[in-house]
Image 1 (spheres, rainbow, N blue to C red):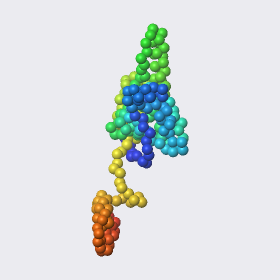
Image 2: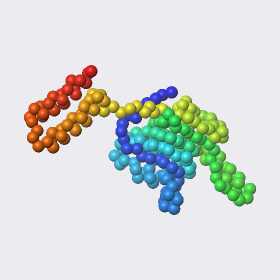
Image 3: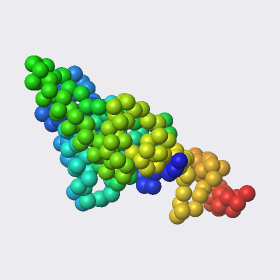
Image 4: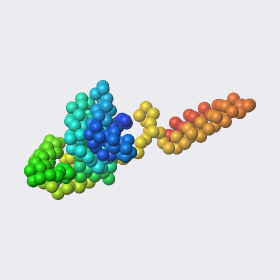
Length: 240
């Protein structure tokens, strides 16, 4: 199991809610108030300068073709793409993740891969056609998983046939994810050197004291001198 933290503080591009096509996205948003994402949302959010990006995924999935379009857009993007699965990437959500240079998962996040499905109806010719289409779609999805992991396509066809649920450890072991995120606490720093909580508290106290001095009608010079000495003491006490 590999654990890594976030390297930089970048504004992420969000893949949240249902994945759908550009034409239907406004309908879901305006009529049902649903959270959805479409290819246009991602393409419009990509930086024009090719700078590195983070893509956060929390999605139950949706339509295969829009997810594949987003995956391809991320693959073709000139900068480095890091996908962070912050909660879940189910079904079509996993397809988008395959477009990243690196896939990270939160410790409690999950993936789910399964066979494609449709609401086909009609005569037996229609059913045969739908079956062929779904099998082709399954193979296309498995090809994306195989390209990411280097494992055989058939391995993923078998897993999809089981409707496989994966926690972060499983996903990393299988190769669908690269790292498990480590939620390390952020340390306040100036010039790369750490500042203790005690020092931060002193600064806060000094700010309050400074306000009192400014508001005082007859502040004595000695008070200001004491304030300067107190500021210096923050750094002198840092090693204690």
